[in-house]
Image (cartoon, rainbow, N blue to C red; front, side, top):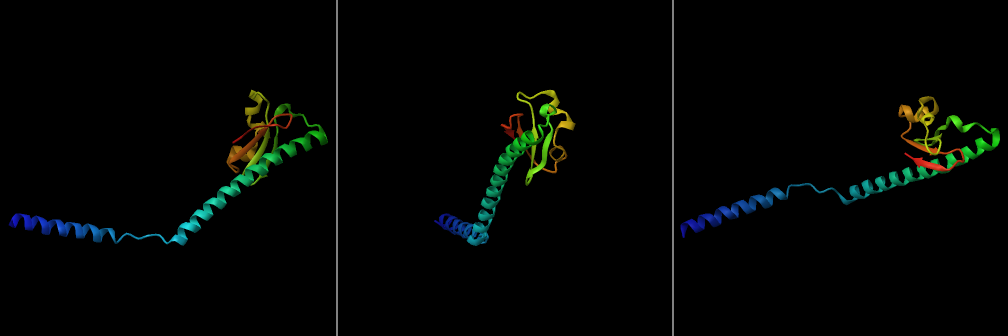
Length: 131
């Protein structure tokens, strides 16, 4: 019986200790969580808006360049080093050719990391891909 009583007391002490230890953790206020979530959603929305602006802007710039000066797109020139925030616009062949990978035919801003994203259009101003 004495052993049972000791086991009961020891178990109670351990359970109380675990309970008290768990009560000391801090809980982030709900307002902080909401602000953090709002900031993340806003950042994602802005990224999507920039991408949409880049895709549309790259096609429009390609069409304007083609119509205004009949530029030769055979060398795959960079049309814009910043068509939208963090986006460049480049012309490539479809299917891609070796000349498209030559550094002098690529957007410097994308090569150097000044912008993180790139829209590639073909000579007919169709979007081939976005990176």
